[in-house]
Amino acid sequence: MPGTFEPLPGGGAAVALDDVEISIIRSLAVQLLELIGPGPGADAPGDPLAELFAEGPSEPPADPVLRRLFPDAYSDPEQAPDSPADAEERRAHSAEFRRYTENDLRAGKRENALAVIRTLDALAPVDEGGAVLKLVPEESRRWLGALNDLRLAIGARLEITDEDDTDLLYRLPDEDPRKPMVMAYLWLGGLQETLVTTLMP
Image 1 (tube, rainbow, N blue to C red):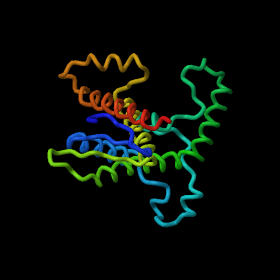
Image 2: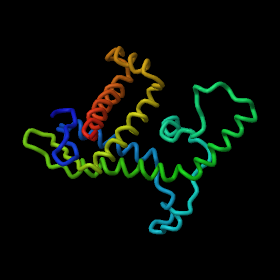
Image 3: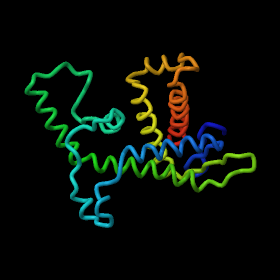
Image 4: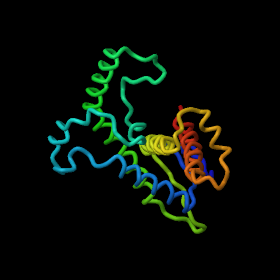
């Protein structure tokens, strides 16, 4: 089972991870949490009304990774250019949609990243190093969301926009400074793919 998720009886998934792999995934999840930032109730913890009525931002994030994680709802790069009036209307719709949904999206992504950290921290090491991670179905879904977000984040940093860009990554020379990020991107993709398979009926 090394490096790939396998289904568990009764649902859930398991994967064998060595110490380095555990450290890499945990570190990436922590970085993702820091990038997403605290929730809307961070200034008034324990105040559920503050969180319930907090509005999110209306403008897209400046950071390219956050723009990839929280894209505009009404923008389609494949679409022919709009007239100025249509473009302004799309921007207004996107701003309103973002204001009412981004906080919830951020909360979901935070919960997924936290689930990854918690399950890794709860692992019992085996004698030869590493551990076998066993996830119940709900944890599997949270891991799947976090793996997707991590790959989107790394893909944004690597400026990957389509499958052709991924093919070029395989041919990067070892001395290219992007190589470690590329290896993480491809490895997380393999984990994500096998985890998807375990969740299929």
